[in-house]
Amino acid sequence: MTSHIPTPGKGVIFQNSKKTTERHPDWKGQLLVTKDYKVGDTVKFTGWTKQSAVGQLIAIAEDTFVPDPQWREKLEAKKKEEHAGTYPREVKSFDDDDSVPF
Image (tube, rainbow, N blue to C red):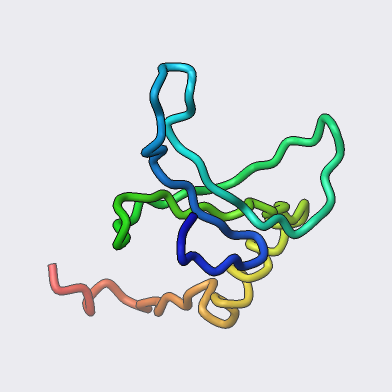
């Protein structure tokens, strides 16, 4: 189909140049999956429009991202670490109002 070299979790999808009826797909391609799927599983993927020597294609990647359930706690800990020693900020107190210029 193409000179695309399959990479685990990635693939390509090309505009179907052999489409002759409305029932034929607009795009065809391949994706080299990285895990086993069973009936009923949803395969998520992402895509990028690119230009190639044989025309426009959509490069696709298997979306295996699993959010960390503790991401919020880790973000807060990182913020605290970045600001360690800077808060609370010391405010100089003035003993008398004569030092205030107005």
